[in-house]
Image 1 (cartoon, rainbow, N blue to C red):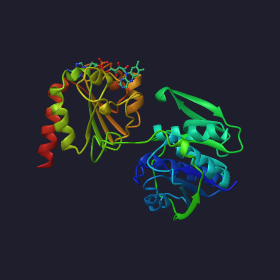
Image 2 (image 1 turned 90 degrees about the vertical axis):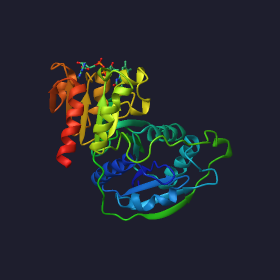
Image 3 (image 1 turned 120 degrees about the vertical axis):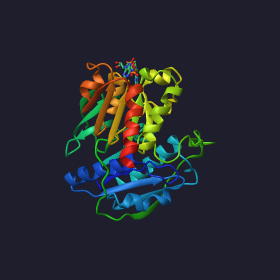
Image 4 (image 1 turned 30 degrees about the horizontal axis):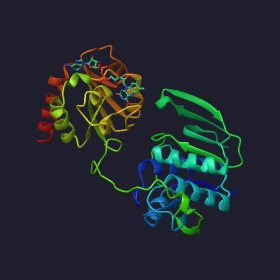
Length: 321
Ligand SMILES: Cc1cc2nc3c(=O)[nH]c(=O)nc-3n(C[C@H](O)[C@H](O)[C@H](O)COP(=O)(O)OP(=O)(O)OC[C@H]3O[C@@H](n4cnc5c(N)ncnc54)[C@H](O)[C@@H]3O)c2cc1C
């Protein structure tokens, strides 16, 4: 058994924070097992990931190559991973517990006939047991994993990504990917937002049903802009068509981990809370002192959001001069 192998999720060479978190978790698992961290990257832009991945502790980056490995394609990428795993025999294969990370691991698991535990939040040093997050974080399950090669994914925001000591050496591995696997092909891409996103924003100002309309989000936009953040919302808001689904925080939306989460007019239902609970500080603005969001938040203002949000914006502007 050679290493702890991390599957590098990337988008045309851009490595998301979740992959860097998986590398950070891999370092502590590998340290416990006395093994190095290796990484596997493939597809369009894979040659660009080596320096980023090396900085997070991967000693060797296996660059998997095949004429059939282009843009993200779960079947082809999954088969390429099978080739890498059979040639490298890692003790553990890990990915980030994102949609793509879990999809790739499921492809690898099914093709290699190995068990896979998804969305782990804690892993025993010998990787024989783990705690995994279910139902959007509302349930933690203890699982055991008995397999020669252990496949796991780490739930996003379980650890903070931190750089590691090793510098990555790139090693090319030619893998067999049959033409028949080139089935899910990305034909077009539309970038909906540039710069910081809801999941990476340091500040998120969210509105719930009490905001009342699409137009009434303007003061929340103004506050988010002053604070260098993004606007989020609850599902009541997306159901009403006031904001796009991309702005929804929660179990069926985005999980966020900002430094400050300002939740205005949001009751804090479990399905919303599981998306917000990774926030480092929470300020709830609500007229109901008993609302879940108020009782769970570190700070709360019992007030009408329509008065409080513009007042905070004015105060921030005043202090910025
Ligand atoms: C399978 C499933 C998945 C779900 N996924 C999600 C998800 O991903 N994200 C999500 O958000 N929800 C999700 N939900 C819905 C969730 O259960 C709640 O219904 C939803 O979060 C409620 O939205 P809200 O807090 O905006 O509205 P409400 O629950 O109606 O709360 C409104 C809040 O505003 C306060 N308020 C009223 N007037 C004012 C005012 N003037 N100023 C300040 N405060 C005021 C009220 O006191 C109340 O606390 C899901 C539900 C299911 C069943």
